[in-house]
Image (cartoon, rainbow, N blue to C red; front, top):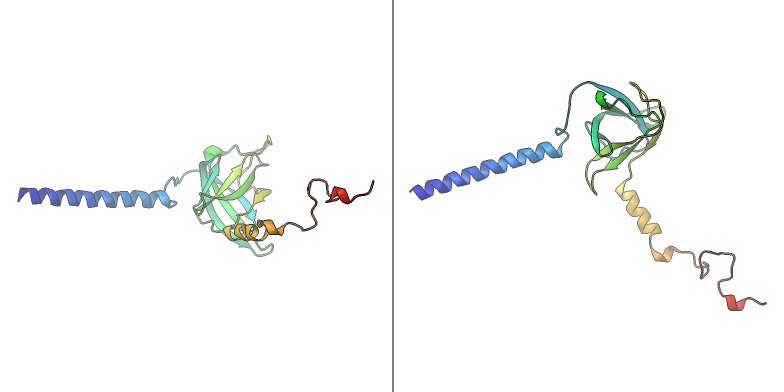
Length: 177
């Protein structure tokens, strides 16, 4: 009887640890992890395509989270996406010639906004907008480009043997001295 009770205790402990591990993974894979509510300032960026960028997606500089996406809206006059970024106040020295791009974590992971710092002595202020932006790359577009342009049969048939010098004849023995 005592042995059966130890099996019950061990099984219960195993199930409890499994639920704790699932709860930990759920908070780490969603935007709840590293979410800091405190003093922040907002910056704006315009993109032609935001892909699957979501609210509270991370904003990173050099791989370090410095803020989150506050809103994603469509500008009806320009028909592009206007993204508002909430940046933590302690990162208030971002040069105003920096660029913003939308990246994907891993091959099929969540998307985030990455900021590439510029070299300007002037810094962004509350409500400023990024001038240089790079939209999201769509996996379907990349696959389509590879399938259309990546095959060896897509090379022109009249390309010369050397390839580097198109003005030279393809067959040097056919030219007359």
